[in-house]
Image 1 (cartoon, one colour):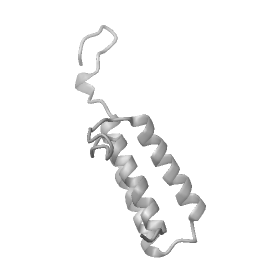
Image 2 (cartoon, rainbow, N blue to C red):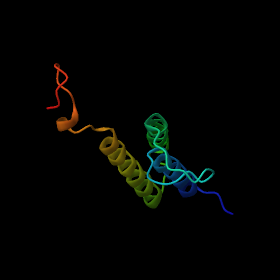
Image 3 (cartoon, rainbow, N blue to C red):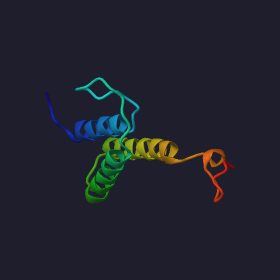
Length: 94
């Protein structure tokens, strides 16, 4: 098996989507959401993107951009509570 930059990004992508509960954990077969872990993976990839800027092929840079975008969009989507289900100061749903 060849290890390359794309493989590293895809490994983190799988970890991120597992933490977001989008795919089952490979060891347990269970789908569980861990937004703290998902945030960590996203931040880690963002650091990797910053530190490798200018040293990636176009394909690698696009892959990293796309993975980060997809993880961030899914994270925000999963971390946003609809306004209609949040209680106001009186405890009533708005």
